[in-house]
Length: 163
Image (cartoon, rainbow, N blue to C red; front, side):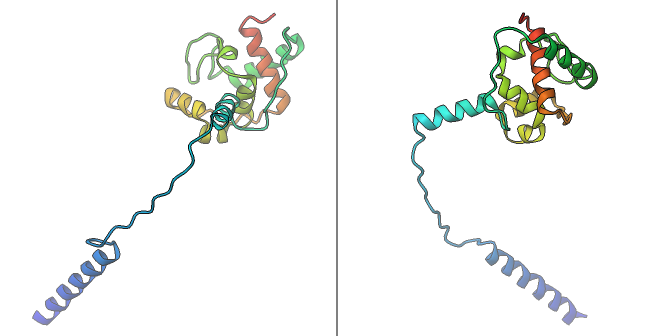
């Protein structure tokens, strides 16, 4: 019986020593210093531009000064079907943020990228992540087409008073 206890203790002690050695306890720590060149003004400007347009295929959306009523009406139908249950047309937060003033806070590219590339935006876009922290609920991917996203954006413009 004593031999069995000694064998178990020896195995436990050996295992502990091996674990400590493998984990590097008591060993010399080596650090590798890497230096990266400071970001240039051009790099910072590009990052700022990217932050404003989000992540996705929309990099430049030309928006006319006047409202396209047909597009806005189509966007209203999409809103009624896919957006209204979580978003209000006021500044009231329901599940998601209210839409009032959204076209002055976000670029058309950012809004359309978020509408069509929701999952990647929530995973990698700082502004989308900040919204998620505020709302605490992920926006589901609504499978909007590019045209749907443009129509919803036009409806948002109408909601924001563009004539």
